[in-house]
Image (tube, rainbow, N blue to C red):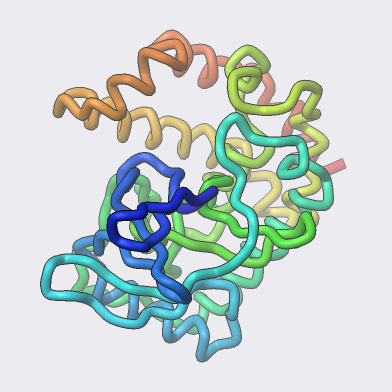
Length: 274
């Protein structure tokens, strides 16, 4: 959601750059972030307060929802990696800290049953559902770093109930990354060892043996869900996703990624279990 800032002299506010859906519409005013509120804003604010109550201090504190459809939350100071992702964001230390941060989120979320009366977004949600509210979008744009370590998680707009392992799979897609080398080259530093990095993420999250065995298949499932999400946006004529699809290799790229994941499933499983 946020990244480097640029001064907006007309209103004496900072325009926070990064992300896709809310690009140009997110501002910082002092200690607060002012941004478009998602349809589930009231439920997300309640969840963020509950997370803090259960000891998770790495998310923004909600302040209020406004009558014009926006929300205000506390600003988390630090660095956010924007594409093309810099080497500092892809170190093993950074990856380990992301896994640990996600584990902390899981432990706090486990004590907070999702509100079953909320129409949570299904765009990136676990198709099998679940009893934990997953973030669903732990991409580099949404993780705040200080001194090379992940310390904050922002933009819960896509949060929805799911299996805890679903969040690990979605996170792995971005942070390993679970992309074929040709696709990864466009956004990531060269030479990243996907099997080794997947093991680091699993270790830092403290996945069980059962979860490790299931993870490669869930990553394939998550990739298919992400592809379907893009397909819906493209079919609706969304200019942002149309442009991103064209610039990143079209559907051929998605075919290549999915085939690569299947072809290397045994390699990833071995890396996780050996």
